View 1: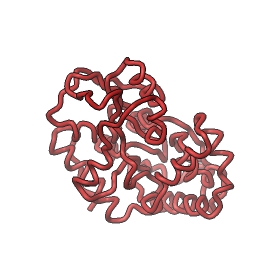
View 2: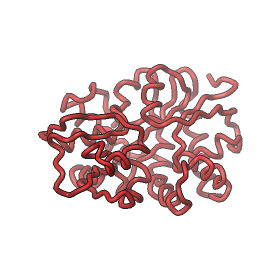
View 3: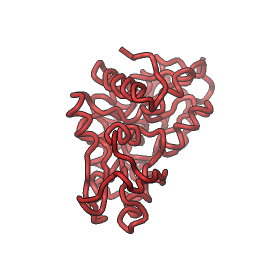
View 4: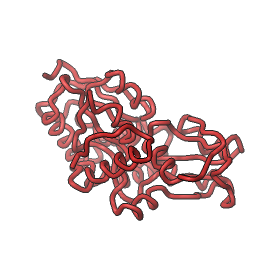
Length: 273
């Protein structure tokens, strides 16, 4: 089933470059050559719907549109605790109702969580904005509220912003489950899911065993992040669920997608558990 080279799309964020360094650089025994594409998750969510990649990192929120053609792999993704999206504003008095809200993508887990959290609140306008433009845009008044992900939880204070809500804290308090952010999918008919799982799991294990090996690759793609923020990012988003989703990880995915389907936000999907 495996072609001469597999196409892989992930973000240039430190957690993805850390996880996939060994696989991309031909260090995983038995794995094929990998053609790597870097793209933000709002791009991969729609590219996967067109079937553009054999292995692809997408938002859990996008799975209802993708599972006919892709299979969820139990490794390589981003879940965890204390790592949720933040709702930012210039002042703590800012209301979501009537606000212009900048979000990083309309099929991102962050935006899905925001919609679930903000039930009953009616923003005046939602604007999809490249991730790196959200905090500056809120700071200079182009947007009233910004929904941010990734390393923004370590840097938003630099823009003079405050957090109206931590959607990870809200989710964990409501469900007791980790927050399911990014999923790794294998395109059906293009790659054997069991083999792909083994390759990625080995890549994760090699990254943990020798973190210095991937440092140059990570920093070269970290979009001007300082080394200490890069390390914070990896420590937060690469965890036990990256190696193996397990029952808690699958339960988290089920909780998110069943709740969003019940709210009429996404199509219904068959539970993973």
